[in-house]
Length: 210
Image 1: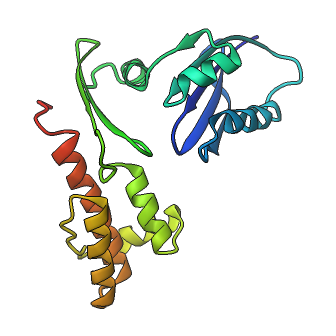
Image 2: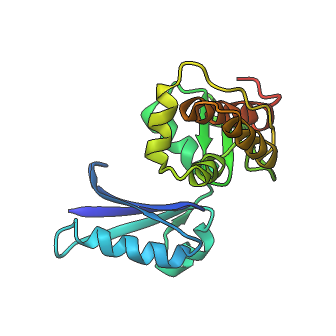
C-alpha cells in the first residue's frame, strides 16, 4: 500500500498527516511548534511512527506552513506549497462550490476568494495580531485559562462585554479595566472573541467582495 505524508508547520502548531492510496486518513499528529519547527517535526514523526505499520513506503512528501522551506529541505519534500495554495486546493477538493475561505492562524489570518476553481483574490493581516489566534491565546494565558476552558466560558455568556480596542494592547487594557469593574469573566471572554472577529473583518476582509 502506498502512503503519502503531509506536513504543515505553523507558528503555533505543527500538523502531520499520512494518507493512504485512496486518500483515506491513516494517521495524524498535532504538536506545539514552540518556535522550533525542526524539533516539532521530529517529534511529530516519532508520534506518527507509533500509529503506522512497522514497514511502510512513503511515496511522496508535501510541506506547507510558515516554515515550509526549512522543513521541506530537512525532509526532502517532493512538494512545497504556500498556505494560500494549499488551503484553496483542499477546500475545492472537498467543497467545489466554495467561494470564500476564512483561516484564523496562530500569527496570521487569511481570506481567500475562489471562483471557477481558481484563487481570484486573497488578503492577510500584515503586522497586528489582533485578528489572529495568538490574540486569544495570549488573553487566555493572562486569565490563567486553557484555550478549551476559554472557549467553554465564552459559550456561557449571553451578554458579552464590548471591548473596542482594535489593537492587542488596547484590548488588553480594556479587559483589565472590565475585570476591575467587576464584569463577569464569561462576558469578558466572549467580548474578546467578538473583538477578534471585528478586527479580522476590519483588516483582513476589508474591501473584499465576498
